[in-house]
Length: 223
Ligand SMILES: [Zn+2]
Image (cartoon, rainbow, N blue to C red):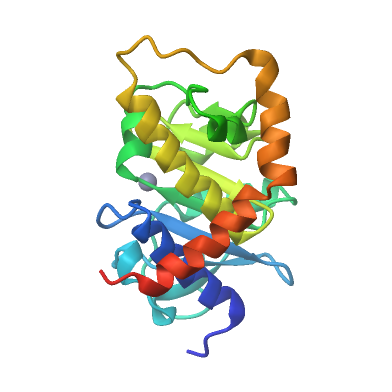
């Protein structure tokens, strides 16, 4: 197939997420909305994130029909279609079973605010009751991150860079948080959280910087 820009971006995100420790075998998907029609690109099911190439990308309509090729996708395609239909502001979705993201999900609680980068998730993370889209869609609301208990997490963004960078940051922060789970480590004071978030996201443009880092990491990644 011809590698269009969205497809190349999607493969870059898959490889970069692998480079950031989110590649845990079969499963995990990255999707990108086609702004022209009710369709989205998504990686196929039978390759790991780190193995992904442009020929492993499929395109689905919102009913799950593959309009590009005959590759098989994860049954999780459904929540991608549901989120795109429900959230016009979302153009990209990342779901992984990154080890630390999953460890956090297995504690069945949200990320605690134990690092300044955790504020990227402050008042913007929710828990899903279970793995079905009915639950995920209803719980997600306007949030950017949803933790699926005993499973993994989903991050969404207005761009693939933001959704992927948020996910990689969640993996890092989950590692810190789960490591400190049994400790008395305090959380950031409430009043510091929103100003820090504004500084990190809007002034420092941390997620955009992290995406450019991830592009370099994808480039160097060898499974
Ligand atoms: Zn999953």
